[in-house]
Length: 87
Image 1 (spheres, one colour):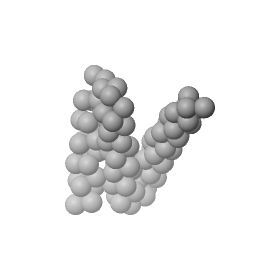
Image 2 (cartoon, rainbow, N blue to C red; image 1 turned 90 degrees about the vertical axis):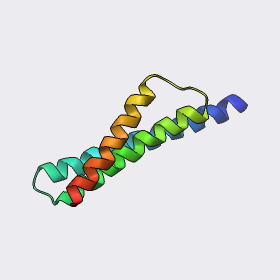
Image 3 (cartoon, rainbow, N blue to C red; image 1 turned 30 degrees about the horizontal axis):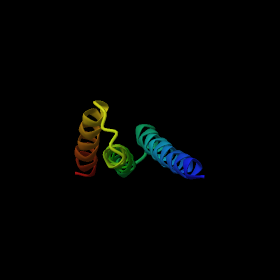
């Protein structure tokens, strides 16, 4: 029973992470094909928050990976590009 609980929690985490990436890419594509810069800023913000969510999830479950530093770098770049698109 406990195994199913953790399995469903992990599937929820994967679903949230996948949907956030999908939404971020959709907003970036809207920006690319003539939308306002706010769509691009929102896309970068969503992707940055998603990568931060992945790092926090891995740290909380004591599963630190070498790729976490890459995720942190991408999230910081996402936040910077978000601010750049707004300005």
